[in-house]
Image (cartoon, rainbow, N blue to C red; front, side, top):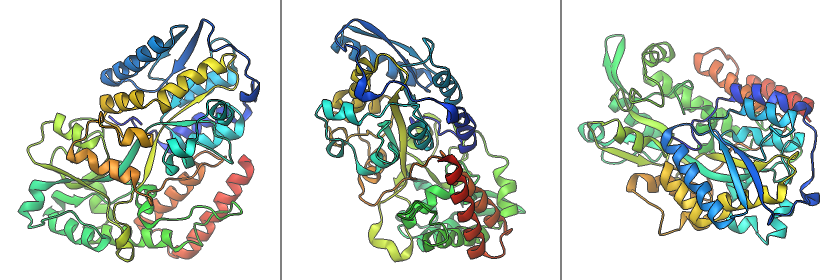
Length: 444
């Protein structure tokens, strides 16, 4: 599974993040006074739960403890953001010292509320130039207004996973590079069956697992916010172009209602019953974990991977994609911040640690050195996602004080648009942008 695990829904994350609104700033990083060489015990909470994931975390912790024999780490897995935020809000001995979260949308709230300590002083004291350690896109989603309250811990890159066998049968010799090629291939690969389908070339609706407005918008290289912090949703034509192209593809593949009826029969995203595994979709917008999961499910076809297609007028930028991942931070209320930093520094910047963890759970490494490490296990399918993570025009959704509320607002508008409930796209985008501005103003 992804690490970055199972990406939390924006609604779940926001419900949990509401608890941080009253969080108090604890001990500042610059005033952390504990001795990192003294004997101590840290508490570390994370969200991984699958046996292989938990084992990988434990192996990384064991390597850390061997290198730091004075520090013991008590690990608790399967912790949701809701549980983490309740504990951080309450503080006390039961709160974790170190936390990892799957929800990059939380970062703006973590930083703005003071729930997590700013790591910039720790980085400076350790002589770490973060710009030389981490890809720029990852630094963008792990800080807010200069407060580096988290660091990247493995990455998710999103691309196209496709059925090579179905491609060959349809006479398609290579994955689509532009949106017009994507739409043509999706139609060729679609096999209608009465008022339903035997297979669709791709499930283009925005409820289709990882096929979110944010994933697709990244291919248009949008600007979410202007320099003054106001929403660019109505000013940047990228959003209108993406929504228009997606709605057109929905129409070409049979229309929203017909596609939604077919999608209603799909299996769980993280099970062997995933529609890509079952041959119900020929192309899937997904992360680096999908090829391995499909192979584990015993699919009877050859799997290919490629970057998502780009708009026809941006063909030169083919290879880019949407990037996110797991983040790691230190509770601002922890009285062991210097020792906690040793753990965070090890897990996020030590090349052996990052590579070992990435190999174990099939995720993209989060440092430049780890991406180039000869110890990284790279299959042809996996290399696609490494290249997306490295691409200079790959992008993410920026951190904001409202957490992911602005994304939810955009997503809800996209849902209405694809259904045909938005008669005036420009006016709808303008109204949505005003709502985003209002929400962010309240959060700050």
